Image (cartoon, rainbow, N blue to C red; front, side):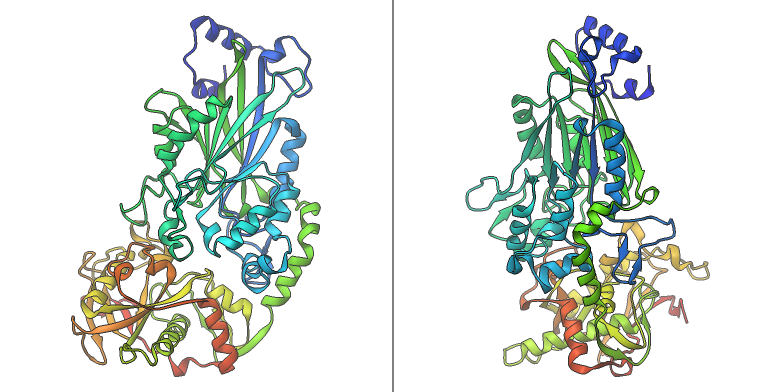
Length: 600
């Protein structure tokens, strides 16, 4: 008997039935192939569920920021065209009639392609089919869960995208704020028909991240609520079973760590492990959101003792999850007796020409657009060291943000407030080159569709904010070796949750514990007044509580612009014609140990 059968055995059935199942499992003829004849075959069957997640707008194996084929240190390939090549192989091997294809969310944000059809030529205005919808329809997806980034561009675009899909967009924990009614389809039950077999009914439940309420507050507040993932699954899984689901697969845009980036104010962010442990009746969970790679993991349900299969494919279409389920007919009903999974690598197959041809014109249109020169730079500005030292390229973003907030405050009672600005190093590979600068260069610098906010904070709150941000660095004593590769991301803090501030000067003493690191904090050359009021330029993600930074989510809002910060950068260069760091760059912060700079 195989190891996967032993680990995957999941139902407490009568002893005689178990004996029959075991006997069938040992016999080669026990597993029915598609098209198999009646006899022993009609008591067992195998079906396959394929899964993608966190595609983030990648269709071709192309990096719009570098204007070249995608490549990384591991030589991964990305995009739906490559994934489609893998899917075609599995369908040819297993039989298309015995396979289903699902996605776990975050599909329509993340590349210049998706930005273009959301903001430059939005499909809500043009009526054009969204390229992700066109590609996924061509690949015959059966269902997809909502990801949190589906909400980035607002509900009208999301609804247009939903309307263009040939399959349901699932969100069992997305409800109408006013009525409490389901705002999206919670689940779908697909029927798999194999020759000589009783049809197999596969229930697919979609769940997304409660953090949407914070991260896209401007788009969803007063319109949608996002109850807990475990809570809603406990409601719908029994309903799916009662409706005849033989197999229950959850597409969960939620990681497995059991942690939240926003504290405890909302239901758990990364709840897929708790989902498996606490809700009976789930056979497998396709995990998303965390951009991790889980070939196969089993979690024990605490109520039933059953083993629940978890798998997560690597983001951007780098991997495809392949979940196989062995079923046995017990008293006329299908029962899952084994579950296993593996990941397939997209770099092992050529791109599917069918998918490539469908979006070829849209793909080329975006390439032409992002390579349009819009101005020049007097010198090259790189973000490679932006995490560990003040750099001109990050100061450029802060210069534009602060200028936009200052202009918006003109003529208001707060016009005299000094303006500070905060920015995070989103993309270590970002470069503004000397000479001609393109839209692509700006998109590579600011990779998220965040919009501009200005909030009021005091000097004391600024100090607290910077102390929280400084937890990003691992504590490193005086004289100890410093390796930039391991100095940052302390406690799992991602680059996008490390903020640096312009308009004030400060040191970060990495030899000190978290909460005691900000030294020599000054404004206009003097120690900062804890009571002084400042206007602070930030983005909607941070203002709404993303990253759980102190004070900023509750700070009085002074400016709320719907313009994307990325567009502000583009508009600045078009208006000025030139980016000249000598006009705005000064070293306002540095890393130290006992007052000694860590880097020259």
